[in-house]
Amino acid sequence: MAFKATFEVSGKKYDILSCSYAFSRNIDHKGRPSSDTSGGTVNLALESTEDTSLLESMLNTAEKPLTCSIDFQQNDDTASLKKLELKQAYIIQYSESFSDGAPMVFQITLSAKEISLKNAKLVNDWPAK
Image (cartoon, rainbow, N blue to C red; front, top):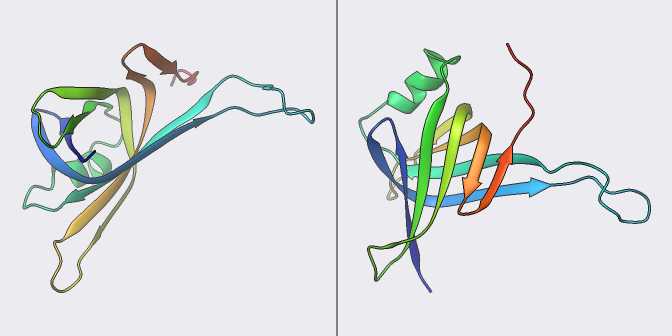
């Protein structure tokens, strides 16, 4: 089953080339969970455009959090299969690359205080500033 995904932030939409996210828990010596769930960093590869607002967000407004979402759809349907929502997210890594004969791509990593996917929700315990 083929999918497509769109990243939406600040009213702008970007086509996603690849996306990954993960959560984890520590375990004790017997393999039992021994911590709360943590993580929730999101890695995205996006096709580059003339728009530089995401780089500007990281460099110029590093302390201003973003609210954004990733909408996953099946290629043959416009209805959303699932939607990953991030609140109080920050771009913590940005890179851009070019290879001859291929599209220019930029990659970002986001870290968010709150991440939800349907009924699943993680709220990271971040200290107040």
